[in-house]
Image 1: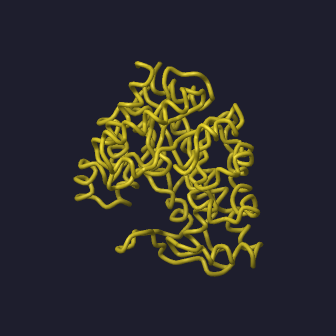
Image 2: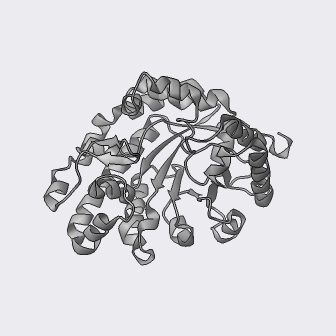
Image 3: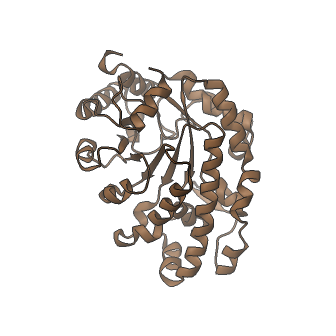
Length: 344
């Protein structure tokens, strides 16, 4: 069984020889080869240059026996394509060149139709990655959910309390829905383009889902995610990662996604009992484990594998993105532990 076959089978809740593994944000600052490349090129340049994005995407696959390559990119390429660029703040976090203040600002955003042209570099990178990995590895694309993107766009960057985006939702629903309609269409276009360019699977990151009040999660976020999934090709494997929202498992499972990503706070075996049998689960080791020692990582990975007992529909991953402080030897231990599962 190839890595791609294993990954796609698990995503469809079929029995596999061992759980497949990939790691969210698996390329990045914890890798010395990435840091070396970063000395020559800034982040945005690497994202927008297909050859560089391909090189970064493949860096972890050259070190570790991962089952999937996820294209090197950023969720904020969508706001940028619509006319709202982003940057990285010196003190940390994301900043937008400006924030959306009024309904008129939302109206000025470009239509979703610009995505295929302005984000063509993502499709080019995916085609290069697909060519490099061939039939052996799965290739993943991704995008941010409309709610998560809107949080950055209305707040003007990273936020701790999300007061502006919530105020927009509660005080001016018409403007909120105008923004979300544009974003849902743009994200759908991006994901369709990624699938057409060779992605075997795409992931939607609803990273700020937990900022929503539980009773408002559908109207704030999930409604728009469902709209996106409805626009994608029937049967396309879609992973939905809604951080902090496992208690909405029934609603998440009804979104049309085939796989639900679970953060590290979730009891994954218990969630396997609660989730529909035809929904695969991804996760969910604490990312900080990779900043400890190989022995600790090995024990934690073994405990996760044992607790899931090779249940159909489990993709091993972290419960969020890999941290810059992760140790290469810990990542290697995690991957090797999973690869060795069941004697394979």
